[in-house]
Length: 268
Image (tube, rainbow, N blue to C red; front, side, top):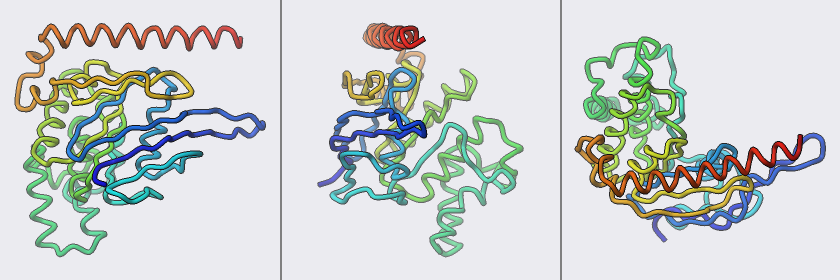
């Protein structure tokens, strides 16, 4: 059973005061090998919680995640994570950051060097390989994070708002890089984002989640990720279908946010 199977996942968090919060309820989906999927929804809908369960950082209250036929029971190199902020070793050089995973696996230096040089060339950082991470811009640091993730050769790349802290121009460039790496590597990618445009651009399939308890509200099959590989993303966004789908989802999310605000006012 290839691919990633999320099966009836529910997640409850017990609070110190004896109450509990149901963050996710009966979430199920199948993600094919090599697919790029974006997950979108209002704040507090459980997007990051779901990603952390897939990563193995959290054990669900109910249900399970299966990867290529086996149950996910904890973090594993088959699933790589790219965080909103790179979570890099800032005092280390770019090369040593990317080299870290293969080095921990005991890979021979010659092989490690070949992998690192190739990845740094791919993400456009070959000329910065001896720089310390703290000397780099935010966009460059996220490129290092992508290269470090790929150096471990995971089957699945999990991305939690990886471009959210970047300025608009850098973000657009990074979106193009994500599509390039997805197509060149054939990796499965799951991307969490708050940006509707980004979700449309970077998802062959886009999953909209409803407010707490988080659950799948709607799914879209989209052509824009394939069209965006190696293309001008601004031209892709000019497609009338892109604008229509964006407006539809924005209205959907806006209604959800108003529902959340209404709940909060009722409690107050």
